Image (cartoon, rainbow, N blue to C red):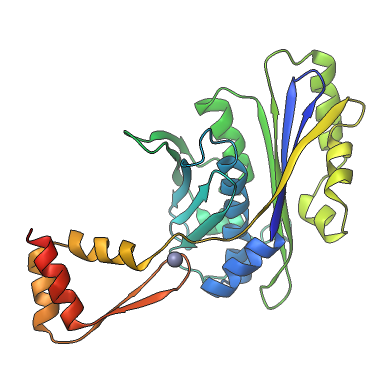
Length: 292
Ligand SMILES: [Zn+2]
């Protein structure tokens, strides 16, 4: 289980969403057999999407975060629900890069240059989509930029993932800290100073610093309250009905071709590796549905 804690200053001028996401990132590593670099890429993106998901307004809403960079990892796709439950996948989960100039996992190099978008699906109608240029591909800076340009909300996003030599996630976490209308200069300068007290969120998680410790450090010198906390997990929403719909949507020509090959079809979920087998008879039944 991951965990999200939300806190706000007493005067309502700044809010903080903090997530401990070690278990979520490790689950992603187990599903996708990610390399060390990709554990960090996907882990940071999953944590960001999860934090942004719980900013959605309605239970039925979902949020998609997709990076389309020219780096070797290919596209990075994460989908979160309203409660921060999240799933994700990348183009090439196995790619490994040498460490960057700072000796860190080269997330920016793996993602590359290009664009990314945030789509909020509110159920009915067209989703809201914010498109941005990738700033560094390090994910956190990109998310910060998204909030400033697309949502006009001054934001600091920090994300971190640590791995062992086998690419297992040993600690992961992140936060999104935002200024709300009415923030005074004093609050802003205090927050700027406090951010420097936690130079690495993954290190803070690795040192088993409690979420209360991290929040009280980031809000040091300010009155605040924790308004809620809840568990989050790596969760996929795939279902047999979903695969049936996808097969039907291929259209009758493609379905007929599959049937004529006389072999069952195995479909694999790109988010959770769940496999579903469809026999020729089942494909025939779907074909007759598609003709209705
Ligand atoms: Zn799935």
